[in-house]
Length: 194
Image (cartoon, rainbow, N blue to C red; front, top):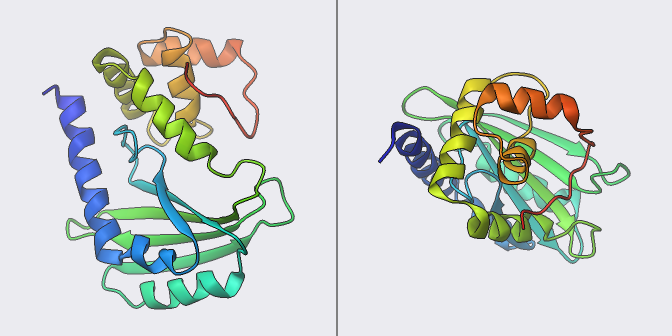
């Protein structure tokens, strides 16, 4: 297995272990339908970042705080933050966990509690399914190499890299930077790979 693919697989395995240690799927399932989304879902992890969405009939702040009050007490959890974004474009309730693993690395775990009738509910789930169908070994490797090269650079979003590689034929960081300069990147992207 290529080094970049092996590194991504190891990060994904570590991320899945954190989800299990924090028991996030079980804890959130009392209040909705939790789904793992983002880079962990399609095996493109570079940043130590875990994303999940919880779809609920009635998203309530107190439900999230019930989950987080238990999570915050667990070994390794060093921070929990909350933002009420119901009135904004995200239309959801957001919790962020910072978790320090045994290796000393700090992971960011994002949980969005949104209504089933949210305008973009289940989009991340559809996106992950479309990514699985669209990715090849070549495109997966290109995405991971670009993500690794640009890790920590402000304003770089995974979805922009995915779109550049899968739609624009980009294969390296310099090509991606040219692609970004030629495209208008909006705040909320609802692009799906074909």
